[in-house]
Image 1: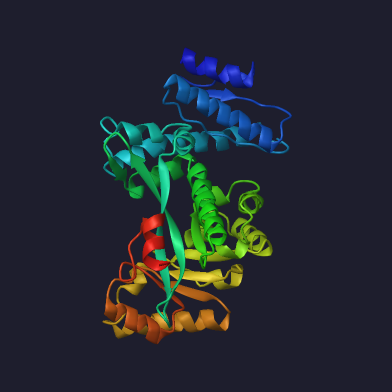
Image 2: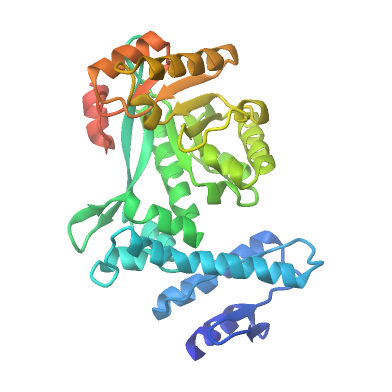
Length: 356
């Protein structure tokens, strides 16, 4: 507890208070969001340097008119971060023996892993349903567990990092890698294809998200049309107005916006009236009945027709069989993605297979 208090005082000065048996509150006054975010990052780094498994819950307001509500928000975020490591354990990760993932799931651990080069992206090809030509790819994150000489599955750490509020570092790493890849393709004279990058519902809620995306892409001198931004459909549950502002901001910047995972649990058709977007990704849970169930085929065809009328492209995920692929073409879906076309693969392997 003394070490945690010392770390907080180093960053926030005297505005540090112990408000519970094992909880502290650090107050930063008269700072803008950027300054506040830097303070939070410094605190997380100090905990990481000291080997302290403390959880941070940052909350900022331009004008604080209700201290209690702001403190409650910070507390909720702190408890969410704390749940992250429990979530990893629930997913079957043995944090005691898997030191690499354990270090990742600590305050600042994701940021540190990015700096240490422990992440990479794989590309999953997307093909035109009409011609079979590769017309795009999706960037999928991979974590290289060097101690065990293997790759940790994203399912073992992504949900936990979302709970912890630490996923932003990884999301923007994937964006940077996608931009670097497209830029290199152009420089080498290759026929570049757009790369889709998926962003967590937590990341898109960050202040200035669309502006930050635009800054990153511009730094690589890449045309925004070559970067497709995927947003999970369920993010509307958090704040539909926020999602609409984000989608509008991205589209006005020249980006294509894709709604991911449509069909998971309770897909809501109000989505089409609440948001303007370019691409709808149909979840594999809907696609798997293609070719074998007439009912599923009618649903997919109706969804595709609706999107066609609205000028929205459709991508069917989880295409694994030739029968599904044929049914997809018959339904008129724009693009296909799945093991039938290619598994996620390292960038150089993707290039050898599809560019030579």
